[in-house]
Image (cartoon, rainbow, N blue to C red):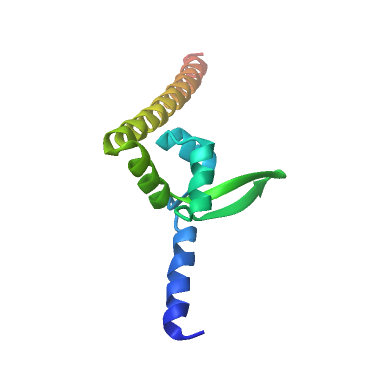
Length: 120
């Protein structure tokens, strides 16, 4: 193997390891509005690279985010992809707000308990 092909292979593998560069097939369906059949068809056509992984014995596909985004734009258009990503981001923000509200309620309960103990 010559040095150029080694570097090319190294760069390809580096993308699989970068945080946020990959996503699961389930996340691709949720975030980009793709169907499982569209994902499988793209894999068979060679437009999507994948790595198979297992969690607790259950298989899932690891996909490159940039390739999934390109597939979704090609199939559904830019506007659709932006809308799907905005919906996913809104859901993530709403989850975070609910989590923070719950945490705030716990802290307020803790503060009132401490205040009542100090008042005794």
